[in-house]
Length: 117
Ligand code: SF4
Ligand code: SF4
Image (cartoon, rainbow, N blue to C red):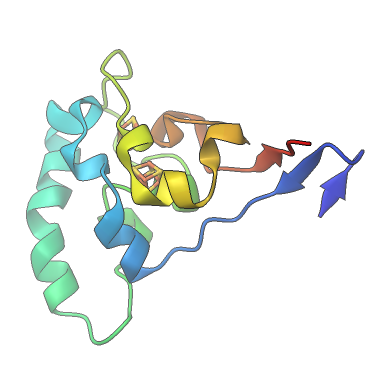
């Protein structure tokens, strides 16, 4: 979709593949969050218990916020550095041109991209 010819919507799919690529579990923003750390601890089991390409419930996944929107944990530390720039999903969906661009756990899911050229 286009708006005034300058932006286009981006939707990052909520898939097992993107859950696996997501860097959020390693992010310092979540390192001091007991809520996020508990979800990180449970995630591997959760993934193992699901069949095929079935993704876990978004509320159980401490990441892929660019797809699912703001974190449900409320004890994250936004003063630490977001790791999205190091993520294959971020690069693959050109989220460096998006709004919001990073800190999706706080800013909500990726929405629109500014077109270049
Ligand atoms: S969205 Fe960015 S700041 Fe938030 S947990 Fe993921 S990598 Fe860290
Ligand atoms: S861009 Fe950020 S929120 Fe999205 S999958 Fe990568 S690390 Fe997670």
